[in-house]
Length: 400
Image (tube, rainbow, N blue to C red; front, top):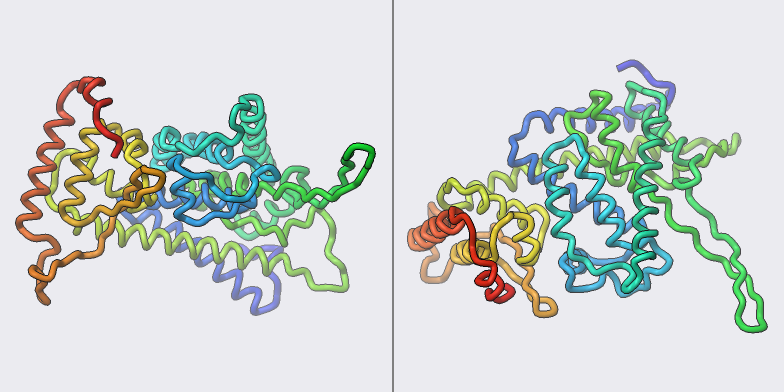
């Protein structure tokens, strides 16, 4: 690769940039070498990461458990007032809609299914106009990010491209870091001026689309989102650095690219290991693809409720009950209850009872458990082969 104008003569800087380029190259090579199951798991993990990164960048404070409870519609995202932040559900809706157009097929297909699984409470209760206004704003941010990226001059050097991206974002009215602005308020006869904090830079929209840019340029095998690539301390808004101080931007951006690429490499490695563990832990090989898909969703995304799983898998309540029961039989299912609703997750840890414990056991599951699992999977095949199930009968089933 030809030297770039941004490669500085400082040896430490050159080492940092070389590490960034090496990490990006390793990521691209690994993406073309792994199997389809690994890529599906990576897509599930990336979808979750993109949603969480966007919400965090907007200032929402929450734990992983709170995110899944909110996504399932059984809790608010945070105890803080969201009035000064962009609304969380609308943001996730806009991101999922955009991802349905991804050129990376596993991610696009997954985003389309997760649109029906987003059960989070509405952002503006009783106000359709406020919801629609926020929805338009979110889509306008993504459209502005797309226009900004399309307007960048082409560059074959990844670091040069990242520098140009930051320069353009720093000069953009929507993506440049905002400043506190005075705002007059009236309290009866009193007139006061208060400082309002500006909304955070919606850099998540740029990170969401940047992978498409590099995929189109032939730098990446798949159009992965790049959450964390945009650094606020490198968005200069067109203001030149003080001539008396060294410019830290090249170091900041090289470190950002290195860290993000290495993080994605780790995610891909974890997805590969998870794919192998799922194959090892899954007793029996059934023709139906729904049982492996259930495992992938719970292992890749995290806790989900039954209504979400039904929408994601396209199964009935009775069919899902049987599938979950089969996982519970072999000790792979975990559940937590919030507001009377079960959230399901899977564990791949081996559970051995005291009676069955054996230091040199060659099988994860007992023969009895395997037999019960096989029988349950056969029941699933029978249920799913039926052309229809009475809606009245399905409605009589209790919520899991």
